[in-house]
Figure 1: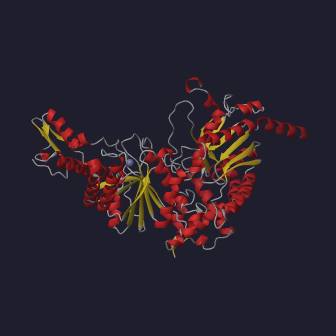
Figure 2 (figure 1 turned 135 degrees about the horizontal axis):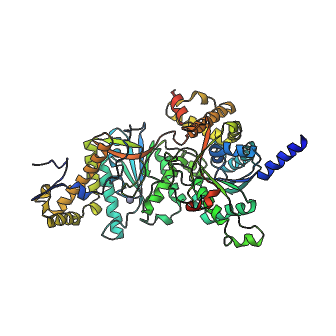
Figure 3 (figure 1 turned 120 degrees about the vertical axis):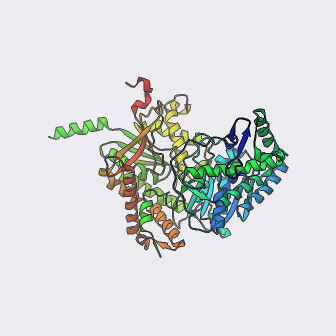
Amino acid sequence: MKIPASETIRIAGKRRVYHACALLLAAWPAAAQKLPLGANPPGRTVLIIQSHHDDHTWEWGFGGFIAKLTGAGYTAYFVRTTNDEKDSAVGWGRGDEINHRESVAATRFLGVKDVISLNWRNDHMDSVPIKEVRENYILLIRKLRPDIVMTWNPWGHYDRNPDHRKVARAAGEAAWMAGLANVHPEHRAAGLEPHRVPFVYYTQRSDYGRGHAPNVAIELTEDHVRRKGEAFFAHNNVRGSPALAKSIRSRLDAQGLEIPELGGLTDEQAVEKLQKWSMESWSRQVGEQHGAKYAEVFYFRDEWDHLPGLAKYLRDNVVKR
Amino acid sequence: MKSLLCLLAFAAAANSKTILIVTADAADFVLAAGGTIASMTATGDRAILLRVANDDKNAWDLAPEQAAARTSAECEQAARALGIEKVVSLGYREGELGGVSPTELRDRIAFHIRLLKPDVLFIPNPYAEYVEQLDRHYTGMAAEEARHTAALRNHQPPLAAIGVEPHVTRELYYYAQPVDPRRREPEAAATFVPQPKVVGIEAAFSKKLRAARALKTIQTAAAMRIRQRLESTGRRLPLLDTVNEESVNKLVEIELRGLATLCAKDFPYKMAEEFHYAGPEYQVPAKLRR
Ligand SMILES: [Zn+2]
């Protein structure tokens, strides 16, 4: 029996057939409650503020949602805060250069208009003052005036990465502080007016303990997931390691097992297939959990959520002009 | 009769407590804990407010210096409305506590704990999630630590040298406005872990409202920001067609009633505030408490 690769991966042996996803992927956290499927917020511009070139393409990343928003007419800008110099096997300078180039290529699959690289030093953001990073973001927010910011969750648990933690807090603050005229009042001299970001989505790695508790699921189509997979693998410098395919295949081989769909492929070709399968499989598992074919889950901060005493009143009483 | 009144007054004074409220900004302690504080001062407790930042950015169409001066005066009025005796301002610039040495901030708060010797501390809950104003988080972290270090002789040696002795604060309230969706989940039951506590504030609501309305600069800025957001998206809130004292006061009342209702949900109150609370038993390991 041939099982389509897009549905599952088959590992065939003399006595056993396994679903390879179980071997490839970390266990999905214990089934949480079914989340509401979120609609696209009204607006035109989305600013994705990330620490690293590939943050948006991971399982917990925003990739599918970015593709969905750009497909619906949003203009998207991607901020790569660090220089990713450590994330490669080719040395610092070249790693930075290649990762930046691949970041541009990857975000194109998702319809992103521009990648803005801030080039802070990779994995060293703990020692950067939050105000300095925050001002970078405030400038961009005032210039681009996004309706949506997507970033790491400032309240996420167990993220060992200093760049994720610093970016989360700096971006979380920038999203609302950019709306206060007395925050960097000098920006007005450059023609930049205050702008509070009305909608914010946070994400957090889900393989680190409790992570965070998402409150919304974003329904994705097969096309969104395919493009997220393309974007994921476009980070070839870090994703395309043939050693991954080689080690999986040799582990299976030792047990008398194989993945028929990978038969005849080189390790380079096999790793691409494995990475895209893993992305498809994750998106499908999350989708099934929340009543959609494919989905991503995030913590959504709605327009008035920062005013808990007024949120309901505003939702009930605001009218069109 | 007169002697009975004297006796009652004496008994009240003997039981009265000293409360130190630590707040990052002029609004947070009012919105999250104002009713509870007003109830306590009404029964004879003495309260002092320690305000860490200066609210120089939370204004509409005012330079930072003007905003700081006005919000400072209004914070004094708000504090008085809650029966708070005195406001001490540390004067840090708003939104910039992330760049302040946590030890410096902790030691300045600990100094006031040792000086005033409070029985009760109110501090921002640094663990409350989705509180976007991170000054509250930094203040909460520093104050939580200060409560601990203020009790230790080996901290801040010059204080003992000038006669400001270490002090143990017996009761601790962590406050936050109800934005954290997980705020009501009980914490782990280990020793020294504060638990959720809901306090009814119906009797003190009018004082809380007066205090929140006294913060005119901050409340007007909030109303203007709402109006500007609505205008920029082709919407309006009829109440804010004109932003003046009357409409801002009405908006503040709606907000306070909204907060009080959210906090009272599932509890036998119409109006409430929420805390994480650690009482005197906090000092005793769980296994020894009985
Ligand atoms: Zn990363």
